[in-house]
Image (cartoon, rainbow, N blue to C red; front, side):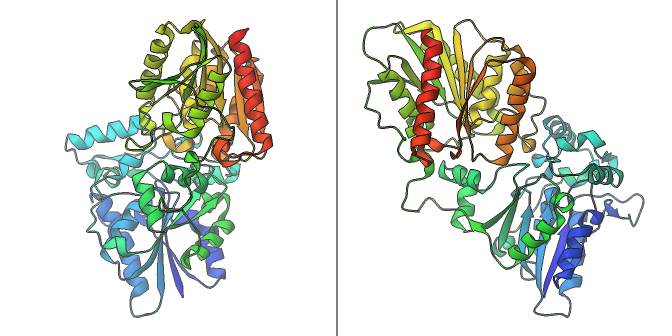
Length: 510
């Protein structure tokens, strides 16, 4: 028999598992929804300090009870959100008793790192970090109040939740003991022997295809998961699937318990990773000049020529090789426009994590200044072309477009901070910046088979464009995927590239 031990995330308790637990039980499983102290379990002593170790002990008690005197039962621990921390802590101490750990829309905590590192809200992270640095006793000092009904999105996407479910989530929420967030997780390493499955909620973060891209560009943590052949599942919903799609979640957990799931391809596979496959157009070589982090692909003639600066996405690990300016897509576009009489520019910027957008923006601004100062470039006719995770960098240019900026283009871009980033109030929010763009032309290349979380930001951007009357042209690639230039070398995709390039160059030469 499979025994599911379900542990809910921050502010929530066993009640959120009701429908999922009922379906698991109907399928013949034994189910235990853990009541964590302060989040469904009463304090033994009103003055008791609650920290991560308290919650680890709560999970251990359920594991020991389920395992006692009943051999042959496979215990599957399911940790949602914050709960992956006490789940891993308990599994590390009972590795021989646990058959599998399921990360349900949860991160990959490491030894010595507290749960606050995964808190989406950066201001809250900073506050708790300062409190921990002053060696306060947050387990005694207080609790973190639960979100109000309109604040849950700061902790994860509420996509898929009905009004009734959101009302119930809010009404039954409990304060989170601060000590559970600031006490570091301590692992001996025994937990690494326990099989792991990941369940991704694609309305809240990346899906499997996006993870594969991150593996391909060299993310070390995800590469380790690919090498270990960790299986993954997707659920097309937000951060609380036990409330938005409880039956589908139960079915996924049953499959996860048996070791099913889709595995990421490791870097040892014979075929090149998607981003290093050939560009879909057969583009002739062009002269290239490399200075610092910037490459110029020069057209024939002395100039000055208009220029297009191609801005890669990310985050890209600092150690990724080759670096983005040598990826076939960026080189392909730059060579292509150079052949049409325009300087093509590629650069490497330092977007290595979602916290690096400010650094990347400074890198881009510096590169643009240097390009415009080149005597072979017409400083008054420049376009910026963004890709994927570079999309948030458009916000600065949309908010205050300079006179020399003739066009902004974006391929399969992220156009609003994703729910798990904790960047809702950042300046890197193109949707909010668009109303200030005036008549600046925007060419948006939209992939029809885009991931749900990115597609939602594009639709939000287009809704705002209609509201404010922005000058946005859409180039659709109906069967194209994210990164279609190397993934989908079809006639449809080639035509889209020609149309997008034509639209951008028309703005530069007008």
